Image 1: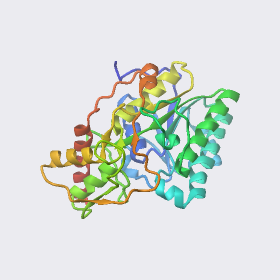
Image 2: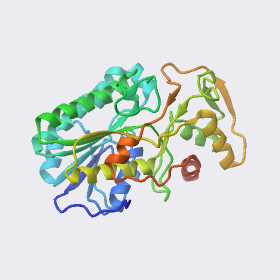
Image 3: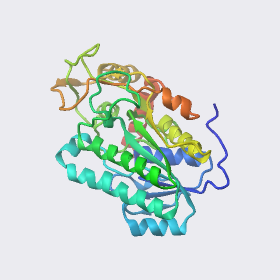
Image 4: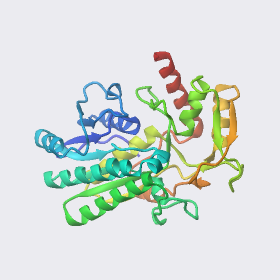
Length: 338
């Protein structure tokens, strides 16, 4: 299947909230690679201006600012909103739940309402597998009950509900993409993860390899999994970006609203990931075993049949070595730039 398609004449500009962040910036690159007109809205609280490609306008501001949104919609021919802005750290959400409901749910409410009032009928939402909580069977498909176990997952699920109910009442169609474990960096080196306070395994491993951390901690090795460590479905960030573009094409072609898992349908344990890091670098990785983190499910693997049936999307980087190599290459570049 081709990943390249010409946008319909009536497609309009794509507004990307959080487009200066990790996933948002890769989606902006994917859109620009297809010649799409893009506008980024980001408050730069965690994103970076340099992640926005040359030629893409950046509005520095809050995705929940109704006056700003009204001005953007009045000035630009926005046809679709892609919404990435929000807070994403699970332990922080437990410590600061109200901040997460404000940033992820209340501001999403303002954005959705602004879209409805402006007559913008296409919306693509950055959701998460955290809406499933601790499922009792694998793989996890979209029919799996949603039982989030932290405010982060709850805040995202509430936004999905708002989209569902808004689509039933208004001329609005949406795709909510539930991400599994996103990792890696743009193969051309144009963007990647920059957070110093990393919470994702492959990013932490890359920081350890480059000497920014003394060692890496494995949180529990006594789970009911083949090697005792947690199993996750890792998806390359550029493949995830392509899925967003495919979702855009789906909506532009008149497709119905959808909720879709984004993963590869196979899992890798923590030990398998770290063994791949050692294989790619050719040297041992300093690590130690620590206690389990509260709320970590033993295994999360996506059921991907629905996204395969619904979207014209073919992953191009679907192997662990590619994901790890791109993450390490990006991290080494960041260190050289310091």
